[in-house]
Image (tube, rainbow, N blue to C red; front, top):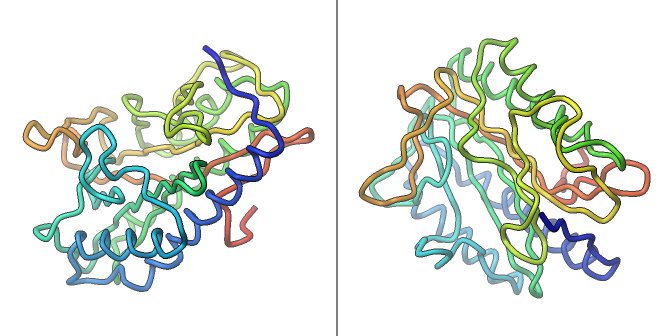
Length: 255
């Protein structure tokens, strides 16, 4: 495993791209309303990214045909935007954006809720967001990558949820997917050590039911919960600094 330590010039480029990815989620938020189809949202996302002199990383990536991943309700990840997928009152939906700006990648996703959602859906969103925060708290020089997954899975399971293990976070910045693999289920104090200049995503996918997923046989991308129960995901791109962590895709000052 070769984890790239980014130079200060590369970090600055990745920081700019990450900022744009986060701003794209802010831009699309007012359009995520009942009655809208996900292809319409994807078209707006692509136009916004291009207007900001960047390109969507997912477009034509390994045959993927859209500019974002939009995953409602029981879709865990890689939901393909479509005119047929119409969002409705009470839905929860993840929108996942990866931008390429001046050759550098930034990757982030968040959950949106449409109108009034159920208490069980809200509890799932709150738990998943807290899982992301727990993972980010583990990012500091000298810590191990296994502790990210250890603290995420311990919390989620204590709340009665399961953690998807078939998808994970990853190094990012110079390529869409780099080393290391960032698992959201991990053994304490296991895995490689974090060093300043490493950049990767943390993106826990938390399920209300079983952790397994099934990938659509026809489109080859859409991953759904195996029992059709709800799933949620939040994602940030993070940088290991000399003293801790910088959340590169945080454009709202949460961190």
